[in-house]
Amino acid sequence: MLGIVSFMNMKFNFVIVVALLVPACASPSEQVEVPAVCATPDDATAPADIEVHARDVAIEPVPGRQHMAWTYDGDVPGPVIRMNVGETRRVRLVNDSPRAVSMHFHGVVYDATDDGTPEHPESMVNPGCAHVYTITATLPGVWPYHSHRDPRGEMAMGLYGAVVVPAPDETPAEHDLVVFLGQLGIENEEAEESEEEEEE
Ligand SMILES: [Cu+2]
Image (tube, rainbow, N blue to C red; front, side, top):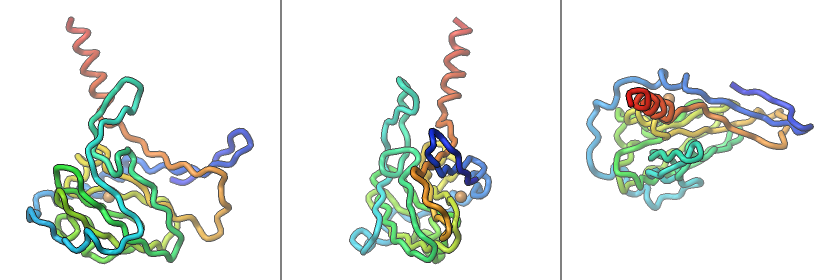
């Protein structure tokens, strides 16, 4: 979803990439075995344009509420990757987390070996390993990326971000905001707490 709002005479381009993305990638591919070695060891030092680190970080999505998130670069959502139509980027994912992760991109073009799904184990990144994903923007839009070892579970923990590809004739906005809707389990925690309070 892409839209424009006016606020205090400033034009904002804003984008909302919502959880409706989740069912698109909910195939049970996590059942495929991923070998516990670095599939692409040379990628740790191969040329890359962007480097992203997967790591577990305690975030505070609302004041006073800590949540141990699985993140790209220590934040939820992860970094916004901006590309123009026709551009190619090499994105190195370094896995500093204790479990295998990947980057699975929507809306951009890449080889099957960069799919980021367990069906393509060379694109899955074990702990301490790295993989360079080469992606090319061919369509304007706001495209999500996420880890695809266990997509639903990983997105619920925070492993997602966006690729933004402006249309060639798009008027530049003063501010560009990417907005994701997610709940990170916070609502459930509050529901459990209020149930406990009621029981007391
Ligand atoms: Cu997906």
